[in-house]
Length: 115
Length: 482
Image 1 (cartoon, rainbow over the protein chains, first blue to last red):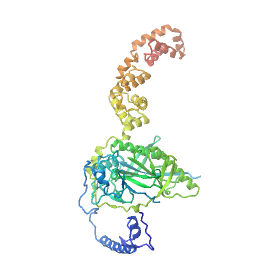
Image 2: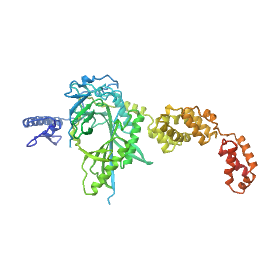
Image 3: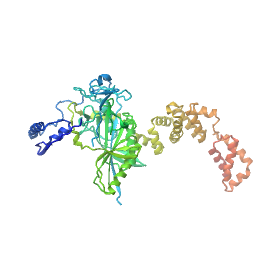
Image 4: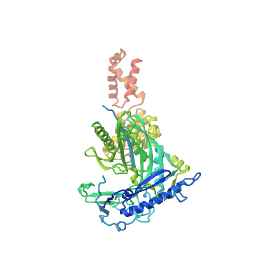
């Protein structure tokens, strides 16, 4: 079912990172992620996200001159697999967890146009 | 009246023909029954982890190299988050900042004029599953439910994004054709639009000619041939101009090409890029393409279509012949084989793109299934060059060789098509004819050239049509002037 969030006022969390003001509309973020949150939950997550932004701000303030930028916590790159077929699930097994199936297909409710 | 200028950028998706999918060991094979080529990774079952296919990375690097891109040393996979039933993970593994290839360009010939289209980026991602809307004629609107097949989910997909450098539907089509030739020459994809292994989306806007600011763009999807891409872009340019000239405004939106109606129709409103909530995929390690790897890609680069055309042109083929030969790979192989054996490149090029193509079309066959080989082409060309076969007879022999009747010389002998190219034998015949028609010779000597044709005809008749007419004419002129 499509999720509709009805809110009296947007719940926001604010902070600054590298002197850039950050203003996060929690309800919008939750909507993008298709997560249904109550007003109380929105307020709770707003407070938690403020903490995370505070933390990010503190990290930003650290002297990092001469430190190589990293994009990943592991000191590793290039984990590949060779282009070899290793097999698949049988179709029955693949469909075993499907709430609905039909003629070997996963069956889902009709797709609503997003416009 | 405002002169309008179209500004077009293309996004092209190319499915790579690897054995296995991008991040798992499922086979890439669409002939299978639905949901038979799926596993926990491409179905997004909990705990399954993706591991990139090394050959797919090689494939995209070869495309980037062929498009004159910089191959990025440090590259990352991102998650592109959106919700659609054909996307099992609710995100697509793609690239965002740090794609594998950036800043390229492709030379595109439009009606004999060289143009350059900038390539912004070439990045690696994975394909989605296929959905079938059931009810109401297969359309999303009013469908009852949707069936999903995930055999295609996770197939390696390369996206090539151009700069907004394209100015006409013709240039867009020429770009599409050249890109298709390149990925086929690289052997990384069959690049068939009608089967969806190559797909084009066009971003189109118009602006008054001579201005710099970009107009509001629309994105046109759902073109399944290069021809329909050209038509769709032409339609959309006209539509936008009409809207603007009647004081309307263009909405940024996705529009779908309706091939039957020949129009574009609005689809969903385009999501802003931030809606996808891109973030680096924590399941995947960074990619590092070091100098040795980049060098290897360059070393393995095959001769690309543009270079091959240039080489054929240097051999004497015209632009169109060179294009036709390069596009039909099996004919190019014959051409090169015959030229290597000393055949006249121009003659062979004309035969291959003329007689041979006509024969293959009408017989509905491939050249490999005919009797034509590089050897027989070279033999035929040398016989024509030596004056042993007339141009007409050569075509007959060629048709017989294609039909598998034997080698050119044997066919020509069987059918009694060989010309007399022995000079002394023709001299004898010419002398005999001139003896019979002294008055004609006199008239030629008096400056009347008309009787030359008559005399050539007499010699041809005397030799049963087997004399080389060029040689006959040369001999008659020699006698008259001598």
